[in-house]
Image: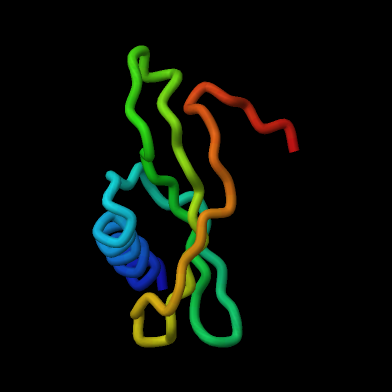
Length: 86
């Protein structure tokens, strides 16, 4: 199962980079749903100096049971140094 999740995560990062045209930072969450998987990934939308002021965004990506992306949308935008106290 862990290998399958790793493969899904890598695929989502590659595809999301191509879709939004920005470099992927990494996957922050993967959860199962009725139709497959929901993956949350962070994307570097704007690179700045110093890098603590980079603008990143979290995207929620839906993936079907075959591992193909069926949709995505941005759920959050934040500075790299920003702390979320949820």
